[in-house]
Image 1 (cartoon, one colour):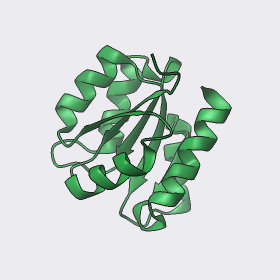
Image 2 (image 1 turned 90 degrees about the horizontal axis):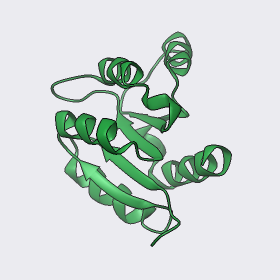
Image 3 (image 1 turned 60 degrees about the vertical axis):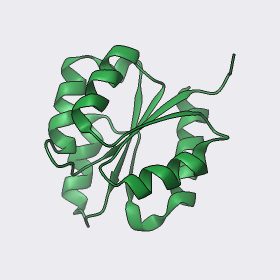
Image 4 (image 1 turned 90 degrees about the vertical axis):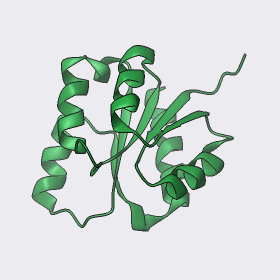
Length: 126
């Protein structure tokens, strides 16, 4: 049995899922979802240690998903890192931080920055 934390990645970009999965394979046990509805159900059912979540998904955006996570009390057991391809204002970043994200990263920062943030989050919270 592995001592690595379970990490779920929810993003509609299959290439990014593949890249992050490969980059994080030594950091955690990775499960990917390119369907946010399936990802939401699994996060609520399984309560992994960490979720990496895309802010803008086709059928539900990250803000709405966060409300659902909050209602299910996911923040008591799971840390969430937000990924976004958008530029977000400082005001938006602050409002997202108050929702409970462990980190907010731009996709343009690259996989190495995501790995770094995951390691920091695991060290601090898991």
